[in-house]
Structures are given as structure tokens and as C-alpha cells.
Length: 301
Image: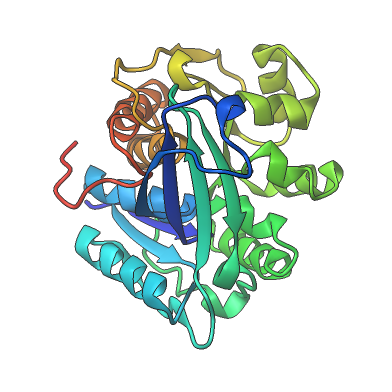
């Protein structure tokens, strides 16, 4: 039986600028040679896109503008098999992220939410048949979308559908009171975040202690560790640590989103934490080996 996942959040166009020098060597105020490419992006959109490579049915809830970028993003969803309704906002402009990628594969992002701001309860489709919901933290962190997302969460909880939540980057979280962010976590069933985010939310430098604190709020917590793999624990159980898959790293953009897709596809279907962590690291290895945050249309996992 096919697992159906609803992904709620940001749909963006990524403008990836790959430079051959370290950021400290950029010729500010002048020219620095680069390779520039455009790709579909946005955490929720990336998760939905990678889910389609796992034989999971993915539906995206988000907004794009009625511009060239929006048309391209919708076309890519159609090619990948991501389901969607009412994505395009009349008179809106699509969200764009400028992604600076240095020679180590590290990326720095400059986002402009555009039409993603202002998600509301009317954007939520009928929940019948969905097995899980993924919510990108970028949406509740946006003050124009917060009320709508919190309404969606309440409705999803009433429908007793598991919610997977990624709180988004520390840079984005710092724009909102930390207690506000932490107040959302008890409504989530599975928390997916990276080391920096776990440390920020708990104030703990030890991952085990961070897991202890976060598990007081969520039933299952997974901490993504990049090249070190991932660690996860379900309340009342022992921690499970999985190494990363070997990969030639070209671009880490979307690595965490692809991991989330692999994890969600397995955990929603089987509830096996070890198997799900392994699935996440496997798909993340495919993601970092390509430029951009989403799979190619022909990508097989």
C-alpha cells in the first residue's frame, strides 16, 4: 500500500552560485568568477520531491507567484510527480534563495520568501488518506504564515495524523522568541533537526543531553549530523546512531531535506527507527553528489 505524505511549507527557486575560492577570498565590490545554475528549492518542496523517489506519494502545500519562476517550479513538480493544488498566487512573485556554495561544498543562503508568506488554513486540502504530514519550520517562523500554520497543525492533530517537523535554521529561528518556537514542539510527533539546531533549542552541547530534553517535548527525535550520519531516539528507548553513506560531495544544499524524505518514507510505513535512519542517509548521499537540492527527473534510488 502506497504511503501518502502531505508536505507543508516553502516552495522556492534556488539560484546556486558555486565559487572556486573561499568566501574570505571573494572580491567584494568587484568580480569573482563562479558557476551559476537555477534549481527548484524550499525545504518542504525538496522533501516532497525526494519522497517521489521513494515510491511515496507526495503532495505539496505552498505558494508560487504567477511569474516565470512559478511556472518553472510547477512544471518541475509535474515532471517529478509531486501533487499540488492552488500553488500559484495571482500577482505574487515566487520565493527565491541565492545559495553560495564554496569549494568545500558548504552553502550559505540568502532567502526571499516572496509568495510563500501568508499560508492560511484555506490552503490545507482534505486530510482523508494522508499517512503523515511534514511541516517546514520556515513557515511558522514567517509571521505572515504563523497563524495559518498553527491552525493547520490543530486540524491535523484532530485528524490524528503524525506530524514530522523540521524547525529550520538557527538563523531563521533567531528571528522569533525561542520560547515561542519551543511551544510548537509538543504538537509534533517526530522532530527532525541538525546538531546546531538541537544545541540552540536546548542549550546543551552533548547530543545525548539534547535528545533527553527534546524527547520531553516530542515522541521521537532525530538529529542530522551531516558527514557523521545521524542519531535518533524514541521516548523510552536507547539512542541509535547511523554513519553517513560515502559520497563525493559537490553541494550540501538540500541534504537535510533529502534525509528527511528517506526517513519519513520508511518510518511512516514501518516505524523502524534504524531502518529509517539508514534510508535517510542513503538518500542524502544521492543529494550531496549533485548540484541543487532536488533529484533529477530520472533519478532512481
